[in-house]
Image (cartoon, rainbow, N blue to C red; front, side, top):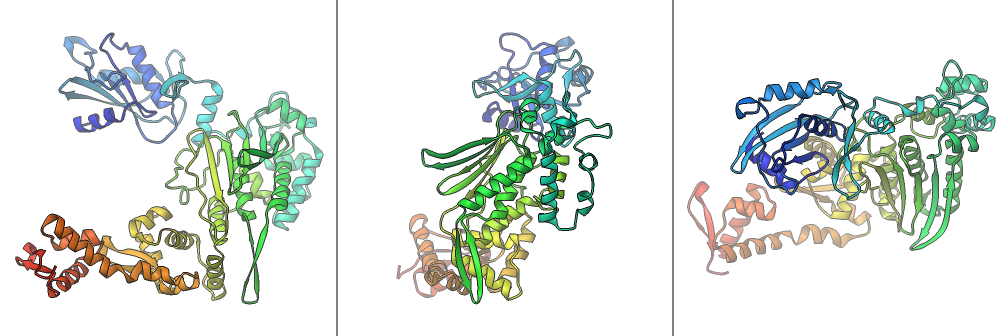
Length: 563
């Protein structure tokens, strides 16, 4: 920990990862210090937290007081104290950082995979308090279970339900599962079809070997009365909203397979479809791709936190569909790696049951399906940007489909070249944004720049994309043929044709304002490679609008006689 790093942490203020503890009025006791440490350990996220002793709540540095004899703080004794007074023992790193205002004790606290408490049994967690500020709150048992589930250490759906009996399961729901297997999977899971209800429940893990009903059993096969009694927080809402008006507002406390069937039926009734002819092939383009909606809804049901209040909400707006569920993204899954991280279901046994019923993809890449289906139907990409630590929200934009984009995708497929998800993401972004750098493309597909460059190069070979510039300045845009196929011939000219003139004017304006320009400055200004920048400057010199001075790396250019 350097003084500069410490200053930057303090400048950002308190957060879920950083806590200030001032000692201006009263010193921090060992008990308070240990409680602050376990509070930071019991939080969501995979980055270390920081406890800064000697910094007041308002960010003023007042300095920490010595904690041991002879007016010093012994770091080794401090870390040993924390390890001995936490259960399980927590290993931290501590630093004494000198600042002009005083010495600050900075303690780096790693996130614990298991709930951590004090030696005398006190558990705290770092969360947003009632005043909307980060605080240390009591950590209850169900919150400990939720923390373990987020980190892949506990499957809530496998827990036994005290008091639940076999009679609380509905035989009709077993038949519903069998029908789902037959209709969605054919013969792939036919072994399950031959099993009696009791053996089928054991095969799925809905009951244990002794016949004890688990949470999974109630979620898949429970009667409505049993679900209301044993899992009262289970609820699914289907809402149709027209601006401020609520057209439909129905809530269900049914077993999950029944809920899926009901909502799929409602989607089919409301989901209009347009027809596009590509040669002799008829292509149906729905308002919202059914596969994408099914995967998004199933994800919300499978990955929701069944210990957290709130239900799964399916909201149909005029211009979009929003699907939300309680419980944030699992540990290790972030918005910037959503498309590439390994699947980490919060309720693995429930996820497996949905796969065996044929409701979700067996590849466990449902997110890919949601994006792929949305994009290939000429719609903007789904967005998870509104998700936070407490809920996951996916928004599927609606509105008019880009029919020519759909035609392009279908025609490429007919020609034997199936466009994959990464290519769809890039083509869609180039159509929306007009141009992308390699860095932006890599960020979009959530892969290294080398992978993005390779995908873009394949699109260039297919005649769909063109590149300009060199090195890091290289940018990409749709080709003239692609713009023509998308019905916007002028867009290519706007994107490509005017660039030399624009670049010349940018260079001349720069010289007018700053008096001179170098090749490097011209390359940065116009997003060109060094050789392209040299050719641009040479052209302006030849025309008399710039004058060259110096030689080799010391060359610079100023206003010419004809400017």
